[in-house]
Length: 348
Image (tube, rainbow, N blue to C red; front, side, top):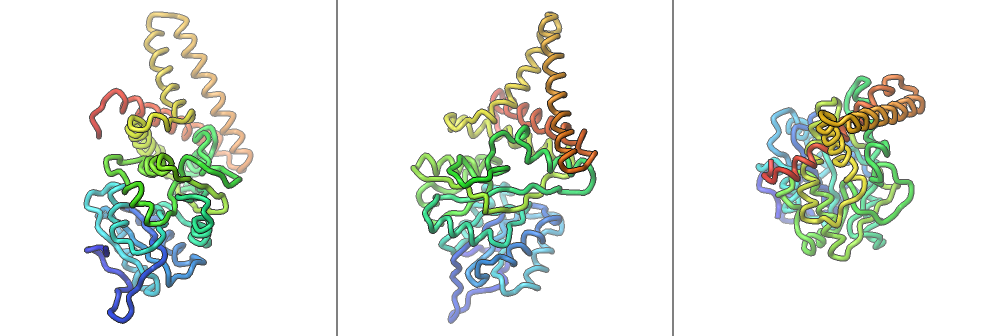
């Protein structure tokens, strides 16, 4: 079903009906800083351009995102590019809106903060046609989302195991079966089997989608040769907002699929809970006060050691303090939001 809003740069004619093999779907909202990078990367794909359609599902952006997409359409008329309105404004709703407009046999889901490598689409289809997985994806290369030491520190922290645990799509070196991939490519018929993205989850929609795939007997496959650049948040405030959403909606998802809980997801809320418990008990009990001090000191020392290590590796002195700050923001906001979501059942 073609979208009823937005304009396609190539419209089907009676004698020349365009039927793409691959539909690339991208939810976006106010992405004027990165949308052109994504579109240019899609235009440079090694996969035949004549077999690709790109569907941008825009949550009614209020910045120059639409203007930049329109400019790209005018300058690259040989790429089928369509914009559809996502009136709900959420990521899963945007994905579903794009899927409803898709014509391709295969779907490649990307993000407006991403920049796929030139062989991204080709490698995804190769893995799918080889039967390696029902949903396949690759590894993020995290790049700074802005200028300055904090932005660089956030990008470095976002790919460090202390911050992201065993999330293989951040640092895997070998192809393997995994729980989830950040974006994913799959046959459109997979939607008939497992359903659309869950619009009641404002974040973690990819993980929930992959959980349903695995529960249906399917396989999620990660190949580190499939690579994309992901632009991290540029400020600590934006990072905190992002990880608050991640933690809050992860708890919502785990209520439905408690068996999908992994150790890396349990550690931040347990850490925050320990700080709260020791903090309250320290008002009356000296041992609790000492344990709180010890925990905080050890945590800070570990973060500083990581900051120093990353700083030496990247030869960037700003990372000595910046990386510990970024990791602490990720842990504390994610863990706090997770606990808040468990305690207060009203969704926000």
